[in-house]
Image (cartoon, rainbow, N blue to C red; front, side, top):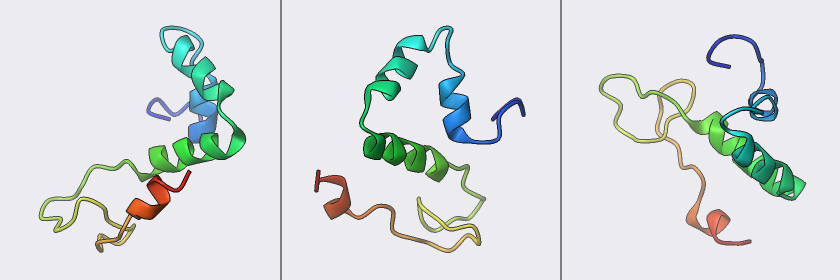
Length: 75
């Protein structure tokens, strides 16, 4: 990802066999639906543009809700 070697967050996580091996193994041990949740969270990380009026924005800079509190605690 950050160095251009991988094109998806899942590939980047799977490639961590060095200093992040413990974290990669923890990710591998998660059920598939929780792995997907982690990947979705990673995809949501972004640097906000100057003047952003919300901490979470869509690809056009508009505020969006992500995720709802109900979604976070429904598991």
